[in-house]
Length: 97
Length: 177
Ligand SMILES: [Zn+2]
Image 1 (cartoon, rainbow over the protein chains, first blue to last red):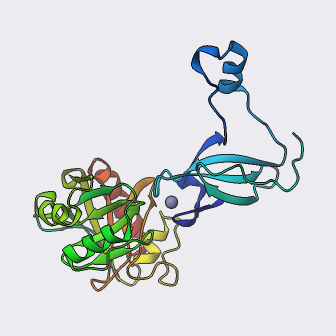
Image 2: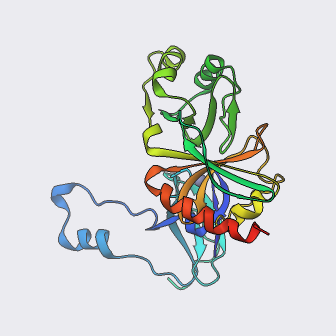
């Protein structure tokens, strides 16, 4: 079980959270000019890193706030937690992309 | 308000369930002036730190940024809340009908709760004046640390009351000699 550091509540059990998938996905614009490829990438194409990745999580059973975190998919190590709307966190070594 | 009904007893442990008067207050981006006004209105240090409780003419528990549980009926709270917040857009809703309260007290209360709750509730990390929204027996609860009354307060959805009642009744068995 992961111990996830909620920015508001501190470390809590993984079961109190829900993962919202990859962070920093921008909806393509403007509406009328978005082609099928760009739209399908927006909907379906995701990074699948072996290593550190940026993810959105929500403290569903706690304060119900969303936040970003950097989690290593091999070790589950959580390297950074940062607010929604903040620029993407630096990742020390972008491996396996 | 009806008398609390005993759910379970064991040596060093008692669990009672009752209705609860509780309302939710929401304000977007609360600033210090606003929380001070709320604190003054109810005679308490308003809980601005996450997962803390303030006690005065009402008990106020931090739930989320700009969101608190106030333990009274909204019709009682509306006048002082409106006076404190003035023109500031806010939302006060009475959720008493949808919640139940359990009071768990006794020297073995922590041991009992630990059977269904992963949160560290030792006074070292969950001292008086703390609260937490967490999970007990797969149910979302608001847990309030024992204060002067010596009891953990647990607030959960009324629709899940039967499940929690059964869970308490079962969980208490090992404490019955
Ligand atoms: Zn939280």
